[in-house]
Image (cartoon, rainbow, N blue to C red; front, side, top):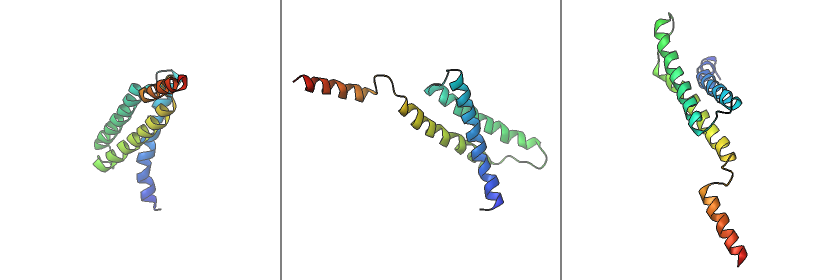
Length: 112
């Protein structure tokens, strides 16, 4: 692994961490939901855009689409992992609609 590859991969990591910190703040204040999860990813992505834009005005730095894509990949990969792991694990108390229907049929079959 070269130093350049390592430094470039930090874009993914730092924006994934930004998104995770926003999610943790939402969880601590009991505001974490599917909607706020999406808003957290959008906010972190927007910050990636503003970060790249501000580099246009910093000597020795530049705006690059590749860096923006890496920033967004870090956010959205982490978003989908959180969405799959957190929201599938914390199902509705009565389960998903398919589970409710299956439970009803199970109860009906047990009575016969």
